[in-house]
Amino acid sequence: MNERSPFSLSPDELRQRFERALDLECDLDPMILRARQLRQQGSNPQARCLEQELLPLF
Image (cartoon, rainbow, N blue to C red; front, side):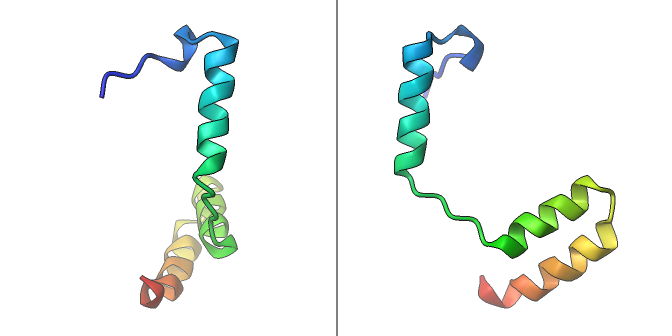
């Protein structure tokens, strides 16, 4: 797929992409979001522990 850079899209094209993304209905588990937040804060050991709790789910 040859997608253009988001910086080169018109406001209408950006809106259309945003609406298509909303249609995908991505729902991230709060524990996944918490693990991401911990990693961003530099708390890698805590993030790894949380990820280990999620492993049986996948």
